[in-house]
Image 1 (cartoon, rainbow, N blue to C red):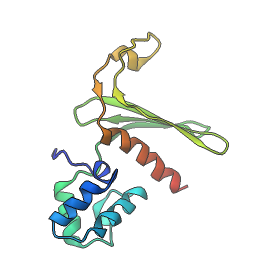
Image 2 (cartoon, one colour):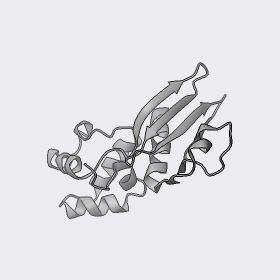
Image 3 (cartoon, rainbow, N blue to C red):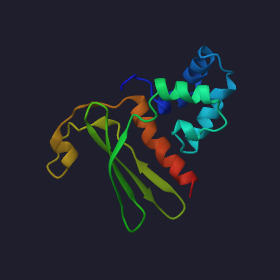
Image 4 (tube, rainbow, N blue to C red):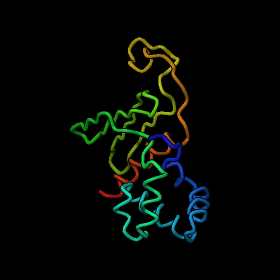
Length: 151
């Protein structure tokens, strides 16, 4: 079911989400409650227990929680997380979270494929497919952010 609305995309700035909940007859503060859940890594509507059941049902029926589907994940001995995502159109991307002494660095995809064509790089060999949407880029960052907050 593709409706074009994704939870991560609506929570990036919050303005669209505020408008949507108001159109549904809810108070504007409900948008902040939803954003708080997402920032904590919760995208399952039934777990958003401070929201009325009717609002959770509207979210479930009209907004997809994730634009990205985890296709594979590898965690190395040093804690580096390499994750492959499948996009709605079947394209694949990768993101990597690398821990260092007192910080983390995330390598986030902004394109599906690459036009450089480097012979040593699998992504380069597949060629350029398309630019990612703002939601697809933001979701990669938001997922790592929520996971790091839980540690």
